[in-house]
Length: 275
Image (cartoon, rainbow, N blue to C red):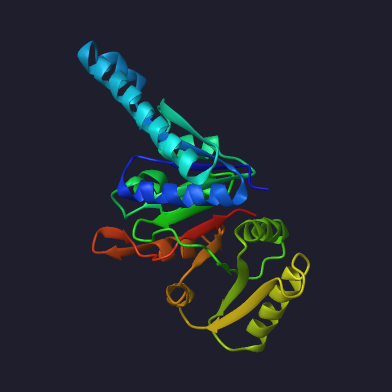
């Protein structure tokens, strides 16, 4: 059961969009929502500044706290949910701070608009550090993807006999959203081995899902990431779920290099799951 949704916010358009997702999910699930603002500071730096600069920093934190409280009050009224707030300051990275706040039974909802915003602060130079270190699922919401009722969870999965706990979690989330689960398997070639893997997938899923509770689809393509991205772009109200172990796929789905720059490419929410 989903206990709490943690949504980091820096008041950017991307973060505000993610807040809408988080509030709707809290409304659907009955989970509490917590908005978290993080401000990094070095104790050595604080010792070096005195008087006015330190007072300005404290005033900024108080201003942010008031803005968060006002936003929480709006969400409480609009969505009829329990919404709390927190302002975190410290020497940890944002990834460490947020990952440390969330645990089993929680969901992190993070907004992004590309490499130069909150997403980079979350994931650092790698596109998946938060997802790896968080003890709960992480929903990454691109800024351009406004909230829509999520009617399908597409789980891109290779056969892994240790995935049962992940399936149980997926089933809980699908029930919460009233969404269909689709298990998507991508084979690079048509072969008896790939067919056997696909059938083994269905057998493993059948240990958790009753007949008719889950769909299965198979794509034959040499480049799995490109095929999954194309498949998802044809969906109007789906979220792509990936296991955190699929680090390379996660990076390639979420990022694309343009020279020395990296930009977000996913045009749909991405849910990073933990077994």
